Each structure stands twice: as structure tokens, then as C-alpha cells.
Length: 279
Image 1 (cartoon, rainbow, N blue to C red):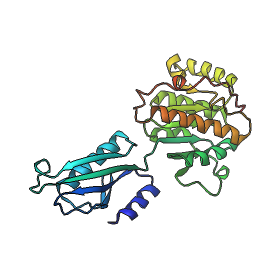
Image 2: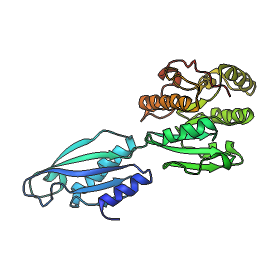
Image 3: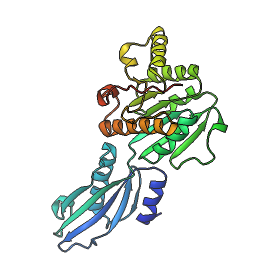
């Protein structure tokens, strides 16, 4: 796959971040062509902007952008002389465009009514979603692109495979399972966001049981329950789903690029939730 257009389409379809590099200006007696492009991912490169040390430097810059999660475009001006190990003079200007940056890795536990309304919303965002339930019949026939359906008899076991900094949403059909998932997530404690569907009464009950298991106040404060922005009103599944998706967007816009350990607690990023999701 040498053509940059095909490579870009393939990487975006697979959810892999990359940087599109374009020569936008070429001054001097260099052999490169303005408009030449290449695509650079974390471990591969496609097409060429002419090879040589300039291309090597471009790959270094692009991969540094990917490692830092940079989302903004970037211009870089190169003097083609001693700094690039070339004998000819001239100036080349490169445009670096991050493509397909994933804002959040999201795990949704539960394929009930709210889950079925929420997951398509999340799939339309720059996110990658794992949708987990033990009941295969609850999933729709068509799973949105960018969503991985996981049918597991033991949903709690899936927590070990989540990337650090994940966004975790628990909304299963079973309170005992919700509690087990909550305990496992709080034990791991490296998520960026954890939302539990339910009312304030459910939160009080869960906090009591979790304290009996040894969880402290700081850990319990990381649990968002009730979840969802209070500004988005309504009790229909789609209305609840929109409020949760809005909270996810608010969180990743506030904390993207930060390690979970340094990210602000969700309670500081968002207003206190008064929404009650009876479940």
C-alpha cells in the first residue's frame, strides 16, 4: 500500500492515528515537488516526499506529534543546507496534519435500552468503543463502525483488558453486576472517567457496600453517579444517552492529552449532577 490516499483511508477505517505530511512550498534548487504527500503512522510510513534526511526529520516530527496526542496542524520550515546534510541551498515548508486522533477509548457495559441509544452516539465521535454484555440477543443486528461487540459470560473479566485512561460506563441489567464492575474499576483506578447509571439512592447504597469492602472517600468520589449533564433534560433512553454523551465530550475536551493520574477529577470538570436515572 504505497499510495498515500489508500493508506490514509485504510488507517482511518481501522481507527489508527496518523499524520499527513505535505510539501506546501519549495524555494531554491531542490528536486522536490510542491504538493507531494506522505502518511506517517506510529510504526509505518506510506508514499514519499522525496526521501533523504528531510523525510527522516518529517517522520520524527510526525511520530512525536502522535506520541503527544497533538491535534492541531503544524508548519515546519527547513533550510536545505548543512542542517539537513545537503549541499544544495533552498527552503522547504512542510505541513503536518494529524488525522484520525482518537479522543477516548470507551467501554460500555450493558446493551439495554439506554446502551442501544448511547453507543451509536459515541460511535459518531472520535472514539473507539467496546460494548460489553453477557446477553448476545440484546445487541442490535447492525453494530456501528468503530464499535467492538464483546459477548462475555463474565463482563468483569473484560476490565483487565481496557487501556489505561479509558472511559467506563456501567449500565447493566443487574445491580449485583453493576456493583462488581464498580469495585473492579475502582480497584484498578486508572480510568479517566467512570459513570454508573442510577439514582442518588443507588449511589448511597453502593457507597455503603463499597466502604465495607475497604474503598475510601477519594476512590468513591471518582464514581460519577448519577451521570449525565443536568442541562440535558428528559427520561427517554435517547435523552439520557445524549446527556451521557455530552458529559463524555466535556470530559475528553477538558482532559485529552493528560495522563489519567494527572487529569482533573470529573467532579471538578463538571457541575454536580442532579439527574436521577431509575434503574
